Length: 338
Ligand code: SF4
Image 1 (tube, rainbow, N blue to C red):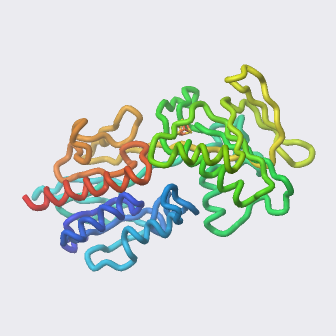
Image 2: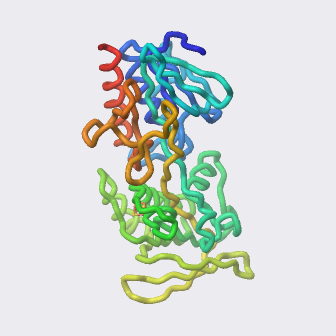
């Protein structure tokens, strides 16, 4: 077992984990971060532009926790598989590579998974090259790639609520940020491809946070983005290499058909499989994300010394994650001070 006298082990190095690590470090706590991937930053770290900050996810992650911090060490390619309570009350985190690490507290900031768009077969993801997810596009832009380069007047359709609010997939929750991401992406497409046409197909538009409604108005008034309330029911390839889509405009009660060059799916957030703690799977909330000790103890779990932060608990936007991770760090620090 590797203890190295860490006060806290943080599982996950997305923006929740990085924020909590920066806060705990500023309070003089020694932190070990475990990251299953090769690099830090989580999902947000792969985004080309984060709204409303106007910077890339990588820049945002680095502004939260600069690369070197004497109180924080990071182990990448370390996947936590289970947590157990030791006889002295501290916690041990076992990893799939056979290592184990212990500390008085553990902060779970393992974030969320993304819905597997192949499960919505009718939308053609993984079948037709023109069908992409929101994550695919962000990654490509982040790498400086330009999908559909060379097309003149490219037409894009953006589909909201893919793998969210979908009883057929047994998913009831709203992923909360993808309306904003869909509108942001529509505006960015219009900026990157000035001769493009973009239509967003939505069920409801949930633009609830600072700047979101303004973004929506801007998309319509200044970028001529079209909005159709309706679900796309069928996607098929055309002879000229485009995509035929069939939908229904539920406001007008009319069927719609269109041809587009790219279909972008706003895939929802999904819960990870629960970690086992002391041999039992962790409590889950109604939608399968990590459950908390009580409705008001929002960063505590049922296990003493084990805390939780960020979108591991359910969909959150970046601002909410930052605030929640700071609160979780404060709770962790309070526990360590006892
Ligand atoms: S935020 Fe919008 S796109 Fe995302 S699940 Fe909720 S309603 Fe659908």
